[in-house]
Image: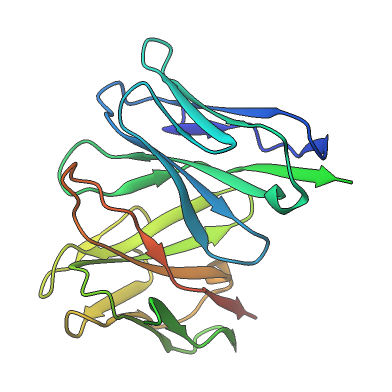
Length: 111
Length: 115
């Protein structure tokens, strides 16, 4: 099993829709998780951090299910500007705090 | 405050040529990283520097060397470029947060093609 797995998509949704992505991770000792956003041909940028059961920031909600070892990202009322690739990120738990990045889920929001 | 800067933005090399990718950050971060990103592979760590004066191998270090010149600068060198090193290279920096995992800030990337 890969350390971090994501559905590559693309997820095609109309403006205003609600969309959710899942990410599974293999390291059961992981305590914190991140979602990064990457626009086409740009650098990744932090979207949300998840340290306990979940986190909410405006239209974005991240939830953590430790028993099943997955993290979800929910986007409500999708905007055209939400079109991007969303990277699930899990820190390694041994030694220095290196991050393991998923391959990303691509979201396309259409008018 | 420029954040993380990288030079060059684009580069084409012939097989066997060498080059150095430059990275600098102005956020006074202790830790710096070099990643490569390939289609379908995600970001993979090449080398990292936990603090000034230290460097360590990441997941894919073969064919690369690094230098942490000072707290601000972290360079990546390809001694003898190979087509398999065609990729987008990102530099990042972070500060250790109270949780132990600080947000990583990325530079704009260098698009390298080796022919």
